[in-house]
Image (cartoon, chains in turn orange, green):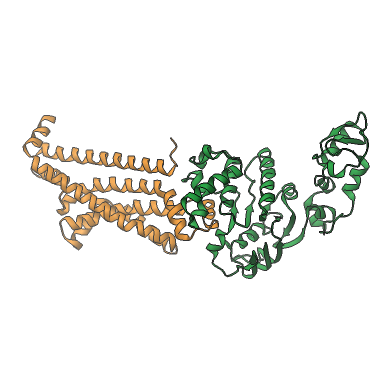
Length: 215
Length: 315
């Protein structure tokens, strides 16, 4: 079995490389978009927290929608291809980053915030010099969750023509090409694990810099 | 100096003002301890001075300037601030923590570095040993010292301290109180010091302001407060042992009268408080103690006079 997998890889390096490249592009674009939306939005919600409860509730609903459903729902709205897949994946990764960032910023020790204000920091300086650095580890934990979710869910992008490693799986299923299907499956799993490790490392180094690491 | 004039603040939804028509005058270079039961408005009063809480009415005057409507952020940079939970920034080194206000004021780096070392030495922390450490590596007492160093860093004329020693154990607290007292005397800072510990108030205060339900009940020097509490609330608050507490304000050296040493009598140092001398006399069964350094003796009769005498000086 393993030999068949290796043989398929050896015979189709181009196809594999293209799928993997597409998968990474999808994931990276979606993660970047999720960051670009969620981080400023979290900051805005902390400042104008009248809207926060409603926004967080809405995002939590988003969180409960299965990834496949999210992808399929974009189909009639946005059609098929790379962009609809990226949009769906962005929506999928958004909640973890937004909720972690918002919560972490809100839950910075009020005594420390008061010390900052009492020393004569402006609200903006308290945010930049105190709240954000102290919230960073939890923000990064959210980014890690989102990254892994996006990389895994990107597999399903194949269903709406977004490409990626899911293509190998769907194509392999269609033609009962077990080795190809296995290559796709194993590659997605490996990519998800690698993403998890990479972001865990990043989170750890942030914790160390912020000085809240336990070891 | 700090002066509050007819300051009132009611929090939304509260049935009565947290601070109610308060007048408080703290002359330059003195420490005013604000004390009272929980909910009396003492912390609110302090936070009104640096406008972390805005008053509904009244005026705030700091160093002769009406700051009721001035820029609150700039005001706070001129007022040192120490809070009970210390509130050191956990992600910054001790040096960065102490440098907070000088940094905000835009001092040149070199001057900041020099000042930070000075401040750490001032509060009894060896700079070389502490500069690059983080707050989590310090004991409670050491953190409190850093809190004081941070508040003093930009040399503010005025300090606000909210139960600064509330979180440290009694032995460390006594040491920190003595050191802070020395520092404040030397630097001639004007201080509002909030506590709920009457012994701390007597030790630290040039003035003690007792509050109840948002109002000032009595504001007087410790001596006057203990000698002549204005009503039963103050009398209860300072405690039924107020005569004894009064004795802590006078040392054996101050009370000693010239006399030849009495053989067999206990001997005390001039800096010993009369309360401790009394305790020693009760223990030894004698009625006179010899005082070293200053010379002379302290008798039980002299101690009794000090405890009960009407005020010797007007305050």
